[in-house]
Length: 214
Image (cartoon, rainbow, N blue to C red; front, side):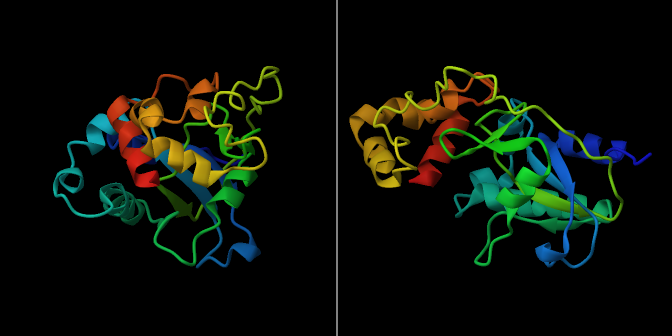
């Protein structure tokens, strides 16, 4: 029987407010340094934000604090656990994290095109990926969108940005106006409408991500 995640790794991730969101085996088309298991790492809500907001990166007034924090923390974890750290930022070229997520069996494309996770819902994000040597038993979640008959994420957008694909310009224009204050301070209404993972993100965290989006 294949093993699950090393307990020491799970404990180490939790210390930093992080968690393993899913995993998949690497493939030849990934063009990685070696074969192994790709473990997708993301925030463990709601523990993550209080931890990150106390970091040196958050307070040093330099560019991209969250990415720099992720490089340091996940890079250190990779070194301690004999893994290779990969990141969704820093390109081009960029790592195919969206593709890896779909291969884990715990992410799907939602009705609005964003990834949805079986536990985190639409408020899922990646801080990094750890490539482990060992094979890990596959996991399979349940796509929450299949049983979600109302699809509240679609009509929740105040500017109908998801009517035909994703109208990024309309979304950003709304955020820059007074009418967009709710989305700026609380996070995307469509993401918040998802019944999975509600209430996990703090307002300060939502504001940080929305400002970075703009």
